[in-house]
Image (cartoon, rainbow, N blue to C red):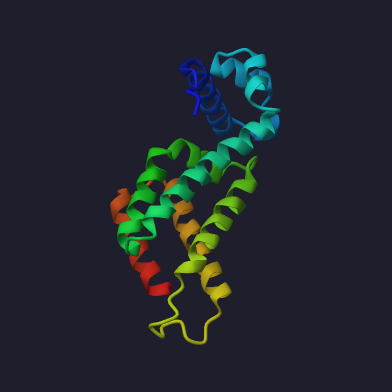
Length: 181
């Protein structure tokens, strides 16, 4: 795998940071490539070198976070729900600017939809069919309920300025997941 030039990485990070900052200030539809360029202190051509347009930039930014969460799921699924949930809430805390902007922004409604779809898909294989606690319940309804609840708690926690430390909220969410799934 070829090593990526640090200048390229630095420019891409500045561009991503700029779009998140701008989205916290105004509607995504009102943001121009020139706004992003000015905020990131890069030429417009640099943005177009990496992204087709601002929608491609937003899509790639969202996809990068979803992929990071997907990678976490690969190893976290080996843990119990409480211990598996803690790294996710720590990740949300580390990436507070992104999640608070995406969950609060009217310009990125597709983020919440993709975020929810991701967790619903991840919860599909977690439904307990052996203990009897989910007898008579539809797997589809269980994962819809659980995914929506999980995303709702994350959204509430982020938009309220993270009123509890990540480990506290994660342990409670993990306990609720154990009861539901």
